Amino acid sequence: MRNQGRMADESKRSTARLATLDELIQSPLQDFLAPVPCKATLRDWFDRNHVQRMKANPSARRGGGPNYYSRADVEKLLRSRMMPGNFKVRGLPQG
Image (cartoon, rainbow, N blue to C red; front, side):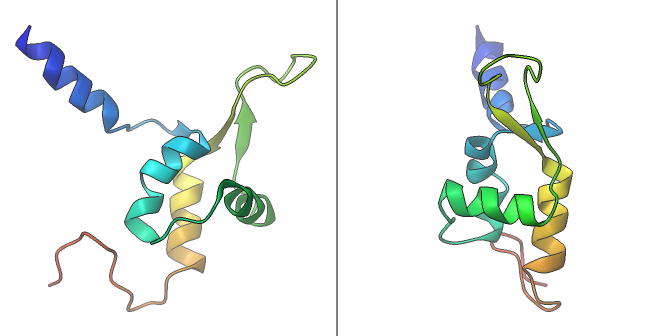
C-alpha cells in the first residue's frame, strides 16, 4: 500500500521522450516561461521551429489521437531561441 503513493508521485514526474501539449505546459514549459502561452501559440512556435511531432495512430481516417511532441526538441528550442546567454532558469539555484 505504501508503494502506491510513491508510484503515483513518480508517474506525475514524466521522464518520457514524447509529451502532449498539456504535459509540456505542466513541465518543462512552466520552468522556462511565466506565464505559459496558449496552446495555439505553442503549436505555432513548434511548427515554425520544426519540433518533431507525431500522432498516436497516424493511419486513422479521422483524428488519430493527440499529437505528441519530442521533449528534447522542445527543451532545445527553449534553450537556444528563447533564452539569452546569461538568463537564469526559474527554480534553479543561483550560484
